[in-house]
Length: 412
Image (cartoon, rainbow, N blue to C red; front, side, top):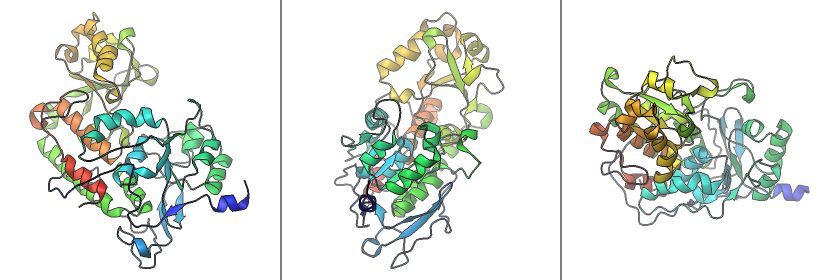
């Protein structure tokens, strides 16, 4: 690859509303309803040192925008000549952030786009008025179905890689030389792994952000801070609404959160902790869920069985990633084997039909709103309305879909 090719690899878009999003939103009008966020908002003034001809960094400075910089651990300060037009995310956590900011059309590569986003589109995005998610031209960065090779990053040729620079070393089997090569020859990495706590594989400890803290940084990169602020306000309102409606802590149910890799037909379950830090468990923490397996001895990766489940006898059992199943497939894999098992039949959760699909682990601001609503209705139907089941729109909603669509479209 010659020097001139390297210099032309980064194609940037001037901030003029041109990054429209892989979402086409037509005819959206302002809405007055609202809901909210995790313990977070508030711009870190020192984290974004923007250099523009006007000194402004928010939306609406299109023609005057030039270079600027945004700071985030572990990258430090990253300089941008202008707003990235095309970008790659690892999965739908940071992908959902970009979609929320209205730059979804620029998502040119992600891990298994049709698998990871298709059901999310059916379950969630499709409920937003005048919203269309088109990933037909988005490249699967896991080209051979297994590994993720550097070459696909050259082929996609994005302006930005929206992921923690340490992530390829943990998940792609790259080394630091590979990361540096793609950063220099294609585009920078920008992100912080916040799905769950990091282990030693990620190197020395560095700051971990909340979902909305990371979202704010991403908004600064795309120069769409007004959309971030609108989502943060909505999220804060939802959080207040949830907190005000929750029963006293002593009256809240305990749940057994089971990994989607559990196989009730074989009597194999993997218990997870719904209170763990990271955006993966955000809705569980926000709803004050109690972990039924706290202090219970399990095997590797939380492995357990029907007998231990019966000893714990949780009021509710939720299967992580369950939302990515069709209703019939979910029942076939999880519900029916438990109902038909001799020991499973004795479980309170089975007898009271409290076996539920859990959310996907990868969630940004939009998906989190839907998954918070879903869990709230599963746990507290009297306060939040009945959960309708996979694929159905609830009769009572926790937040205004039109308002979300308007924010994505830039209509505040």
